[in-house]
Image (cartoon, rainbow, N blue to C red; front, side, top):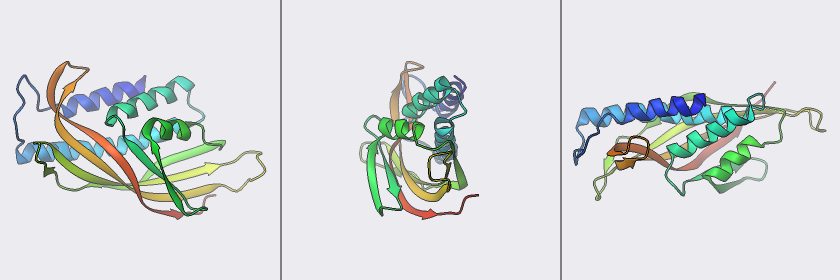
Length: 196
């Protein structure tokens, strides 16, 4: 339950511009505040992937992390996954991607940020919403145990994540306010790294 509680706290801090009639536009300061909070959410997303992949965590804790991540994204969001050995990139629906992360065939897995996330400036859309593209740097390390392949695997992937800022109905607070949700995650580049 800790991941879900932490996310709800983060969500409430993002809901700083709320009320019965949210403003139709945001000030530069409000956009900067959402920029800063969105960077924190991108980092949290990768942190939750680490929780989901961690086989030492309880089943409930890993499932709570999946539910929390689902709340961070719009419905229908997709995530790209690269395969260095096959030289291909595949696209998965978000929930399927998270379930795949949970069931990866390694005895130990670490998924971390290896550099600070970045976010473009918000661009106002014709419908009054704002969009920005974030970049994050994900490091994956996996160790096999007694599966015939004792070599560990590691890679670093640069990914892009679309952020959508608009007035939304908050199901938790039952009111409309400005809120960021992520859209799709795409692979920009992947490189193999040595793992000990």
